[in-house]
Image 1 (cartoon, rainbow, N blue to C red):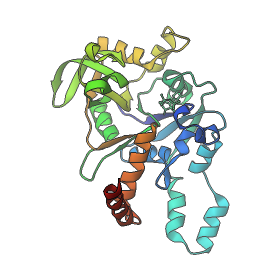
Image 2 (cartoon, rainbow, N blue to C red):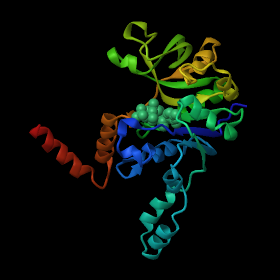
Image 3 (cartoon, protein in one colour):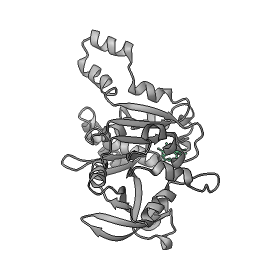
Image 4 (cartoon, rainbow, N blue to C red):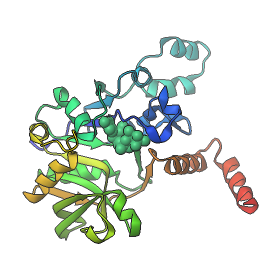
Length: 291
Ligand code: UTP
């Protein structure tokens, strides 16, 4: 059966690029404007028909569970004070069917995915990395929706890619492909962060995937390198068997796990905000004249 009912969001990394804030605050709780990044990612899933979201967290990430749970005193107070709009905003964070899996040792992405196995078993799942935001504009198909549609039509695992050039090529997983039809590529090989000369194409893997059922067993069989198992090894295995597709996406991608990407996401969201957008626009124009 090709229906995608579940999604995994691995969000248990150490977030060392954001120290010292990530010493006590989990990276997925860093806000872009007024929302934690993890909420943007759960919102990407609202129109996709996902029934259950499994967030993989590090130990001591109770604050993420609190964010998606009931805040009894706050909700009661907002209602008593007649602050319906703020009440709705607080309530909105409770509409997701979220489950949590704890990754006790941050041993990489494959390890995080395996932590979600009790919820997934051998079902297909959507996989959304916790430190990338994909924002579709009005009229565009959200990236994860596009991947789910492709999977449900073909039954093959599918990954999102973006075009990269020059040195950027070496910062991402890279795909080789046989043929492309209607923007969908038949992947035949994956290389992790290749040198510019070793790159197979200009297509870099980004953090959105739909993975066919049975992958957990494949992950368990992988041979570790440097004490870690690598998710790209499974993707490469699927690619070599002709069981992996790739597709570009519409909209903007923000790498919020990186300081510059995080600031860009905040600036762009602020510009789009009805509340402060005009003020920030005037500020940026004025600032541009001064720097
Ligand atoms: P990153 O490679 O960005 O690592 O993880 P990180 O630990 O979050 O950040 P830095 O590099 O130390 O600053 C990519 C995604 O995979 C998740 C992260 O939470 C992030 O969403 N991840 C990574 C896990 O869930 N577990 C891990 O063991 C590693």
